[in-house]
Length: 415
Image (tube, rainbow, N blue to C red; front, side):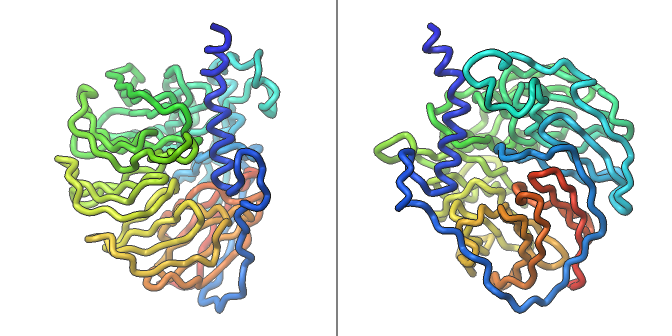
């Protein structure tokens, strides 16, 4: 029994090892000959200039932990958090702090990992381990934690509105809409809560594979359904009112001689445009699915775990090797590719003032021409690297670094 419990607890750590291995290109046995080389940055003919509007410190950041913790802009503010439990609101124009809270002071932190095998891997006792979100809606800020907490804060004051324990880690953004908050846990549960009071409405569960990437795809709420990509490489829609499955479709098919080779997770968030869902799997495919039926419109061979950007009739994606692609939205035909930044652990692309922009592990932002993929500008933010997709509001880009710097940036192009 003890061995079985240890195995269950160790699945998270195994996922961390697998994810780090995949990103570095090393085998589990440390064969240096297989290590993926990182592309050195080459000189560019810059057509734009980046300027820092303001920057602020948000606690201790996320350090070297896997995280998709991202800032969010709404209600005139930009909201950000660190892994340990600091949540802050800043005026989006001036950077002036509006409020700041510590999650430790608002809720009882789950101390279940205080004792046992893995207690030594955490940087401080009982951190909040914020990992899912932030999401702004209904005058609230929603976030999830690796401890299994789902929290709603008042967007204007930072006060606790409600808190529930979901029973498993939440490392993807909650989906918020149609009066509900839906979380997708690392253990294969999808749970819907009332957005106003946190009362549970329904729960759906699927069998997760033994080994998965570190992370989960955030659900998306659209047209009365909850769109989900899971650790088995399967896309499905759950009826938002009751959690029953409406349809299912394979996006990534597990294959290979080992569990590591068979990874087929859908970790990138689903994107819905005009009645079509765009999804991508690791070791799988990029697919366009009919929202109402799940029928495959088209599919193309790409492998990724970063979020897609769909805009202006095109799809922009960063694959698992940090190659960036521009595709036609109608049929997935490749229009261009940029392989000049391979191995730099690029984020998913965001749209910024006429360009697409990605961040990398050394803290550089790169602006690419959306027509041909050429790098048009570069700026070094630093901060131990950029780990999450930048967020854009109007002409201002907000990015968060691993050491906790929140930076607001504008460019001079105006295109």
